[in-house]
Amino acid sequence: MESASSVEKKLKVSGSKNKMQKFLKISLFLLVFISYKLYAEDIKQPSVAGSFYPDNPRELSEMIDKFLEIVKPEAIEADIFALISPHAGYGYSGQTASFGYKLIKDKSYKTVIVIGPSHYYGFSGVSVYPEGSFRTPLGDLEVDKEFAQKLLSQDPEIIFEPQAFQKEHSVEVQLPFLQKTLKDFKIVPIVMGDCSLWVCQKLAELLKEAIGSCKDILVVASTDMYHGYDYQEAEIIDNLTLTYLKNMDAEGLYYGLREGRLQLCGGWPTVTTLLLAKKLGYDKLTVLNYTNSAELTNKKIKGIWTVGYSSCTILKKGEQAMLDKGQRKRLLEIARNSIETYLKTGKKLKINQEEDPALLKEMGVFVTLHEQGELRGCIGNLIGNQPLYLTVRDMAIEAAVGDPRFLPVKLDELKDIEIEISVLSPLEKIDDPAKIKMGRHGVLIRRGFNSGVYLPQVAVETGWSKEEFLSSLCAHKAGLPPDAWKDKSTEIYIFTAEVFSEDNY
Image (tube, rainbow, N blue to C red; front, side):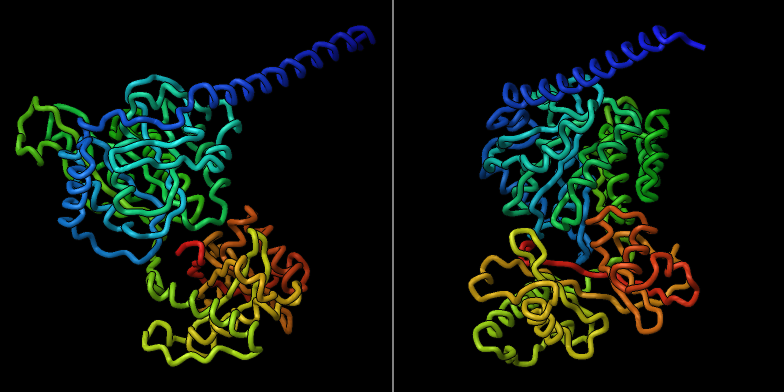
């Protein structure tokens, strides 16, 4: 046995190590904080305006307008979560990039995360720009400081490294396209150096936590493809790389890039984007366009430098929006007018029959009210027994005055209320909980006279595992034992929800 003095010495050494680890951790965070203040520019000036794209605002604007006018991608009403977009000079990659940007034009995104590789500064890990603005010839774009802070000071591999942004073009060349297609948004610029798969996974997890249940986030992975002197090899390697992208095989892509079988100069940003998308339930990648510089210049000659370019979207498989932008805005308008009329008169709003067929369908609806970010009421009808626009009217009123968890909304509160609508797909009975996709499916549990429901966004907001989600649903919503979902006599139904709010429009 060890002597008392020997044990005491070991404890002292252990205690010293713990103190040293705490000191180093605090020092790291202080160093990161100080670097924000010393090196983050209030306005990050463009590095490649005048070379990669025109520095004249009018010329640049007209160039992008022409790109967008020419391309005719198949319309997608579903929410696009991510783009994979090239970052070469606009004369080479601009037309391809415009395929993705055409599809997000005028959509409502509040924050755009642009992740690019580092071409000029060698470092390991991830650099997140913390605050300030990025300037292009079309104006300044504000960095989403609050979002950026959720990523920083969480891991020693994810920091602000100012030199990574000084000459870098991979993030910058995406910005004018965003300025021409979106309004009222902020950016989160991220540059990745050499990264292990673990760092890509860690960044994806931090992004997932920062995004939470928000539906107004766009991710842009900035990358070109093949780089080399053989145009025939370019097509072979790029086709193989695109296969991994279509399959959303993040790990296979990572190791293929490490082994040199695949090529993406923005490989780690793309891997991270795939990992993040799958964590949030986005599982369909579509290649909108592919080309390479040999095709564009008609110089298909070995020995001529060739670079590949692709434009891709990521959304949810099989997801086609039930409602378009105009229909969503109309339902939100009906919801607000209905609450206001009821609070003023005590009577339901009289609405002339809508002519839009989509608003005449009988569909389930939940209306949720938030006040200063806090839940203020939520009432819904899972099935719907009247036209959609009338169900929205009635559920909006009930959410305002009929939710037993809250006092009725007062008229002077209404200006501070944000309305969210969830339009539900038909219920589908399942015989195996394994069929439930967290973040995509809402779930109804029913046994006897007991029932309870959680909307799909509950899984995202809480971060629960499937077992935690179902156990809470049984115990806290259906009044059943927590493990009732495992009982064959318990009925389980799934559904999807199209969620939109006034904040989106």
